[in-house]
Length: 91
Image (cartoon, rainbow, N blue to C red; front, side, top):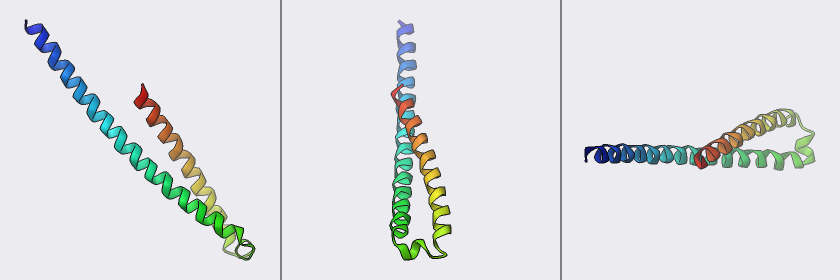
């Protein structure tokens, strides 16, 4: 019967859309993971500098601390974005 063929085509189209959406999500998640990694590296680099008392007491410390705050905020946002994407994929 034609009804079966039509519903099969619709299901096939839907599964293709689901597959493409999954691929898009996975690409987005990978990109966010790379960003998170980069941010964590930058944060670690600044932390390592701030451990040094000479650096900590220099005029370079305040801008480094400001940058650290910005990076940590960005990391928080990226992590939240990652969480939301991962949980939406599980739905």
